[in-house]
Length: 449
Ligand code: PHE
Image 1 (cartoon, rainbow, N blue to C red):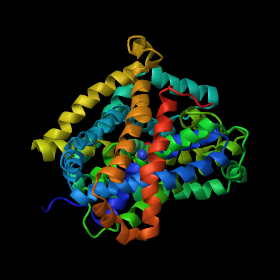
Image 2: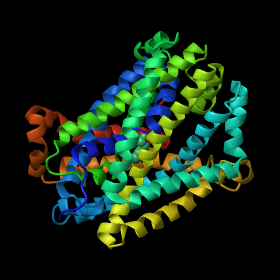
Image 3: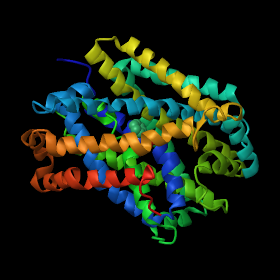
Image 4: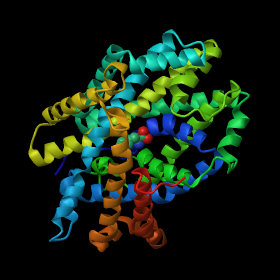
């Protein structure tokens, strides 16, 4: 069974590529802003380390034990009489639904690289007009960039683990790290840097509410890409020589450091311009471009670097959500990789088109159902319902269903008895309970204020 495998560093970069995405650079800074900073960051760190990383390790155990697609993996590891657990492997469907709207955002980012290079908006209100104009009126630009995004993603996956995914990440991830590092050093020279540090690390309980904890837990899942067979699929392609615990810790650390560094960069820029960090989702597409404009030519360079970084981070994530489905079709259905990739991509490209149109003035009425348009529905159903369910299934499967001795054999050599016990408590009790509570909250069954 000698298939296409990642090298050790290739796996770390690819899994980190999956984890580091819009969640780190776009979402983490704005939810930190909205939830008051320091306390939120602390809760986020705790949930990432204890809950997120535990499930992450669980997925790596599953993938690296069987080295097959997620359905076969769960089927193989489930004891006789419980083979129906294979259905939990279909959580890869969450991934391709995410792909369909994530690629729309990748498209906006590609468009913003061009905007950054040519004509930054001169004020916040102009920036708002530019962004809303793109989102609500400019179907052509969105379509063009969305299509480019999809083509890059599908092309990469069609080339397979080594020539596609590993190669892409080997280039984009170091490039991303270098860009962020340069931006970080530059942001340290700005007047607002001190304030940014205080905002992110000084506990301010004023804006913090119980709901912030739930947002932090939900984000811990999203940012580590767990609960949808992505990490399982990547781990199915590692060699036996990889220390899976060390690799997981490295990936989670990279993801966390990049989130914090992005937050510091963005808040330093925002504070230096005398603005407030609590701007919500418009932070990156509206507030920042206007500030970059005011910074003159340095702002232009920063803007281009920033949107390129965001593009790199989001493309490596988008690629990872397509892989588990393709892997399933190749391994279980015997379809060729190229056919599987372009077939699935075509279906979810079309689905995504509806999500794209649902944001536009022309079609939003027809594509809004209840309180949300299709774009928001995709986001909500995946992040609030499907990912947490996928996460619960993984935790329960590894914690209760799979043979205990195999789990122990996979982990104890790398983490020792004590940490293994802590990890087991996390996957058996803490993670499922936390996920259950988020789901009650996000689906509105019980609302925390
Ligand atoms: N972790 C990615 C991010 O932070 C998003 C993602 C979610 C990627 C699920 C793959 C799977 O942006």
